Length: 212
Image 1 (cartoon, one colour):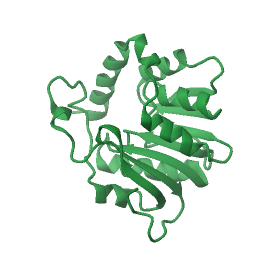
Image 2 (tube, rainbow, N blue to C red):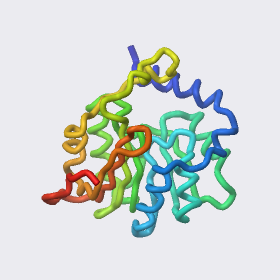
Image 3 (cartoon, rainbow, N blue to C red):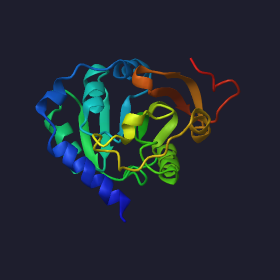
Image 4 (tube, helix red, strand yellow):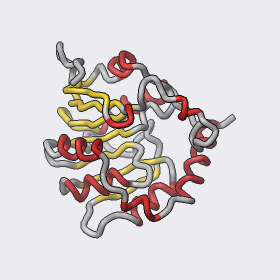
């Protein structure tokens, strides 16, 4: 079975049926937190890993006047991001594989990875982080959002169209170990149980794993 293709088919269906009302949903608390944090990034060339239909990319490009590049494996998601991009927003969308990023070394000052690293199998999540290390400038800031732990039963409910998609449910310690090559500046349990991490690329230092 080709799980990657199966996942792409699921998301293709979701984005094919996406209503225009998705673009007008007010920004979430997590989106506002992300904008506040990434405002500090030098240069603000931002990579949105697994950008979906571009909601976060377009918001950040408008909110902090950043040049944002969204990458996602779903053609339909990238098309929606481009279609719904505000007129003055500097956001572009690229179809690609997050485990083999089509960007040169050290080409981004900051990144966000929202519900993507754990929404794939564990080896692919690890490969994605290695690619991030390659394309990020030293000292880049990052905003990472992972699924709740433990995942709620609704994640496997028959009404959830993504229930068959691959994921690895990182517990808190696994998540911290996954990001051990970075400085974890803070992390917290946020809205709806999601876990948000504020990180800085570079070797971790003692005392950086505390929960905010």
